[in-house]
Length: 101
Image (tube, rainbow, N blue to C red; front, side, top):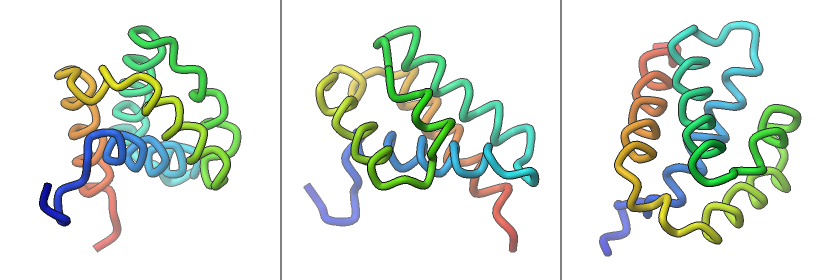
């Protein structure tokens, strides 16, 4: 694997953390909030993702990030789930568009 390619679990984790952090701010766009909620809902509904509540309470916590990544690693099927990967990409795109220039 090339070093500049992020594995799917790391990409999903990073998107969730960034999305939760952005969604918690008063300046988050609707697109970011919707994309974050969409990804989280897919994980909760499809994989019983328990870390969603933690993300909403403490999105900037290192413990939250570790819990999210561990939970996703324990469910390796998420790395091959097309809907999850598309939702992750949609969240990343929304975050990029919302980023200040």
